[in-house]
Image (cartoon, rainbow over all chains, first blue to last red; front, side):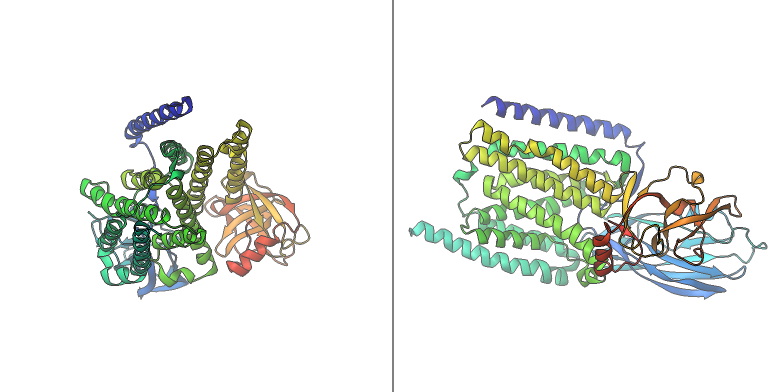
Length: 170
Length: 391
């Protein structure tokens, strides 16, 4: 074996050892890492919004027509009086060929804790809901101004970012 | 032609016909009729193809130095992945959608890594048994087509923007990967292709997190690794199969390309907006006479928006896209937050909505006339955009 070839073997071994070291370090630090969203790593995994439509509207007017992209769905609604409620039907499609399961729904609590607290969001999606490859699921997102509310909020608009986290089903 | 040669040619013809048939199966028939069992059907298909390929001879003089090439490839793949994962420190990490449970990992090893291994085995057998250059190209195209993602169907053609994203994020990286895999198969056989494709596939199945990169950066890195692997292997191959002088070796060394690669990466980061300054092409005449349509401006990120002054040119995000207009008033809203009133120099009235801190993308510092025209044309004709876009 030439000197050059030998050096290469040594470098390869060092790199492999480094990887083991990094894995140990990662295991120790993984609790401290901030992890956001889902990575796009394989084309076999492809979950996206396929539609958004207006549902039941009581005392509510759509301000801008609901729209969606693969990863975001947007609606803008005006609630006219306490007791008003607006529903939007959101379709999620599994266009890949790996079965998926909804692991968590984030953002509802944060949105509802923000001002104005009189505007309340909810979604009927629950964890462990399965979305098999090639199938579509509909969820209802509801935004309500409770009838028990007696005051007109000082801040009159509220943005909610709701995240549906899917993972491969076992 | 000897009896043995005739046998090999017959095998290749059969394999070619099966491969073309399987392309049609993979693209159209399996997803349509097998739906959630697509992965199983696809795996069985590739097992069958691999079995058929076994009798084909696969040893060549051009495999000289195969071990060295494998080591070089492994070293590059490891270093690349280390650097790639370090990107997560500034950009954040995202969760792997694949489950990390034991049986799911086994499933993914079979259906994802296993299929890639089978595909590259068949690729190596085919590539090393064709002789005309055109056949290399044809088989590389067939393998690229078989690995492409068709799940979105005609939705890919919904808009110019979607087509552009699909070409950049799926087609170009797959072509780059396909070309480099075929080249590795040609110069080192199955094991050399495995040195590249298997670790890359294993990482996707085994690691729980990945750097949080958007489609653009993911594509850039996919193409980059293919280019680096090709350059280094081409160098190794040339050195092993030709008698080169020291001077010629030095001239060919891919290390010489590191500065150009670094410059290219910096340029890509600049255009993509990962550096504090970002170039923007102006698509309207609303800021005439300061700058007009087709000008290129440099937008610099603003650390503290409260320091922005009346007269500064603001780059901000609106519902209709990115806008570059001048600040004509700075005030506080009902919650005590600073908001800006903006207006195009050439517009008769201010913009209808006030700009909040969260919308601010940068402050325009430099403008160069005409430099942004190619982007303006591309944005309007291909992407169908009307506001300002990145060059």
